[in-house]
Image 1 (cartoon, rainbow, N blue to C red):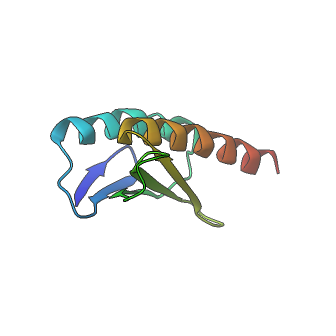
Image 2 (image 1 turned 90 degrees about the vertical axis):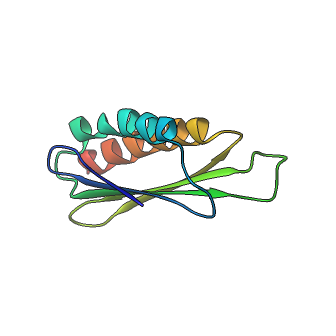
Length: 103
């Protein structure tokens, strides 16, 4: 488990049944740090990386939970690489945040 601090947001990265490389952790930090700009009120971000047995769709799963007042936003993406899954999750999170701001 890795704890990172962005501005006011606490980020935790957890890899299940494997050790995430430093390169992967840095990639996640870099990608998700940009969420700070659109989710000013976020209090935390949890990332869980898992390996799945089904290799047809891709066996890498990233579950990203953005902790926010009024309710968390949770996104789960599956891809062939963790980088692809994190990219997809980041895009979905951005759309969810924008949708919530519009309300």
